Length: 552
Ligand code: PEP
Ligand code: MG
Image 1: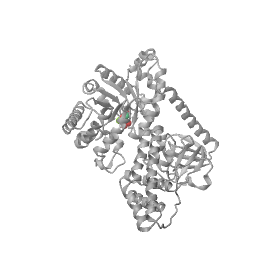
Image 2: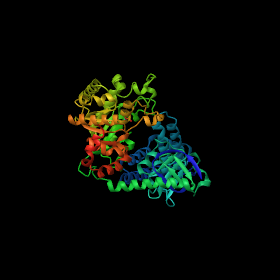
Image 3: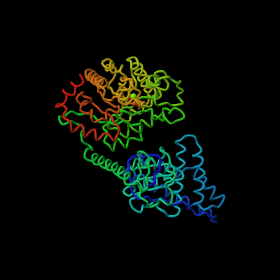
Image 4: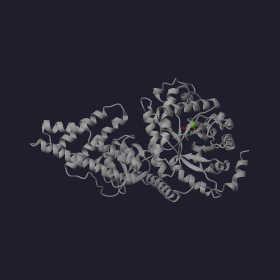
């Protein structure tokens, strides 16, 4: 048995025979041509063929994997006609008499290197796209279709795989994907996730020729790769695979079914997401909406603030892709365990009790304003709710609402469209907010209970501190009583109440939450269907009083 560690970028366990991918254009002919005009014409014909191929492919991919995957290929169409690439090729053909194949490879390589040298991680990634597009034009010069065939069901290993190569591989034969290079935000990883194929990147040793044809297991969650596992490891991996198979089965039977109890009580089962990349998972798992979009992920892993346009695009993408469902975007929740250097926050003794979330936004109105502008602009594309995290006092909500009004006024003045049906809500995740929920309910449209922080602050247990063990009881009656209080106060004032912390997915509490009348449970996409199943098996009227009395 050999084990290797890479980075899991598309979840799931896959097993099969390891097959090495050999790029069709690894070696191109390199000759000097006599008729330079004819060679230039050859290039133009191949360029047009590549653009056409990409258009056809984009349509196929749109049917199979949705708009995001297709958009990538449409981007490649534009790149295939990029003026810098075209000019570079023309210069090499006309000035040096280089054959079109070598001219495309050289000009593509030079342009790719320019992109790779840029600081912006997004533009850096475009380097791989340029290489991909150049390879396709060369393939067209050679009369190729640009489609790679697989010998049978395999785990595919490659140095790196261009996105257009990835989407063309037969989905029924591609069991999993491992690359030696690549990055989690790279398009290959994105494509693998979109196609639902387990993938691991950055596994430098996978291309050892001795491994080709061997049996391999890859775990796209942990990034582990096991070649020829011993019996015990094989059993573990097969169990995980079996769990996934069951999940897929569940998916089929519960897709499109309502989340309603046996006695007819409905609850909305929604998803927690971190950005547009999670939209396919929401759709696949039949999330009934997005109960928590943690917008801070747009701010993490960057050198500087995401500007209004960047944020608008991300919010718009989610809202338009899920325009039939409600999307709750939480304003920036940074601080405590999520730090970003460019915010220049002073070091704090107790960051969990310090400047975080709404506190930062209220103290930095420009930061807050930019985010709210992006959100309101995106509201024109779907059904938006805006939610403020870490509220402790009524004045904080009032001040945040004033900023929302200001932003709406600005957009109106500028003639920028936005929806006038945007809902405003708060996270109830401090004991103060829970205790004051009767008053807070008069200021907002909805509550979402953040049980992760509510537990931390109620029990005085740092959520990052694993050693607290039994002292940090997530089922503690103090927390459950606060949740019940929030639900009662919310309903008394006609406010919807959701739970979006980890506890929402805890199936041992589903009956209790239903008994409290919680309107929505928002969980990670993979938890939606198991939770729906639990809801559909529950008879709340039979257990309501006993469950509520147990909390008295
Ligand atoms: C929570 O606190 O329960 C919550 C959902 O927010 P986060 O985990 O992002 O702090
Ligand atoms: Mg929280």
